[in-house]
Image 1: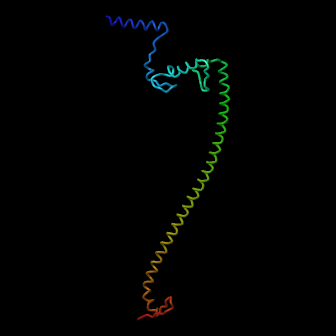
Image 2: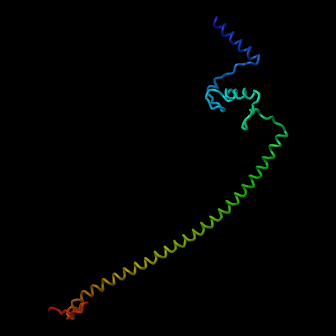
Image 3: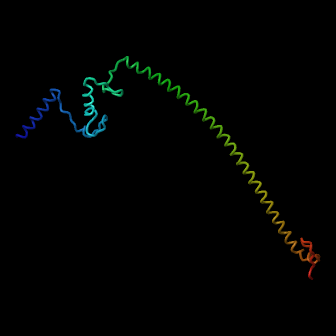
Length: 186
């Protein structure tokens, strides 16, 4: 019973704190976060102790903010500020589109030049291919002529072998390069 009463008392205290606007925040998620301001693990950038030190220092007299100092206040939206923000964006967009058009035009002209080069290369490859076919045809013709010459020379060789016996009887002397003459020993 006493345990139950203690739990009820603690719940009532929490409820009273919530009513008075001082609700306890759950800090379990903060333990799993990394701070974006200081880079340390265990707290969010909203609860950064370094930022609290900087703000405390900034509250003192004689403090001059550095050039890169920024406060985390969000700018309120107004119609005038929206129009002022849109006009420079339109100008930037217009400049971007003009630059992109120039880049596209340059790229298109370069692609056309590359296409012309590729077409000329294709034409040269076609002529080389036809030249190779012509060479192959000529090689076939030469091969046929060589085979005919080989067959003719074989038949003439056979005939000359038959006639060589008769040539021996006709040759009585032979003259060498040095000019010396030899006679048939028979």
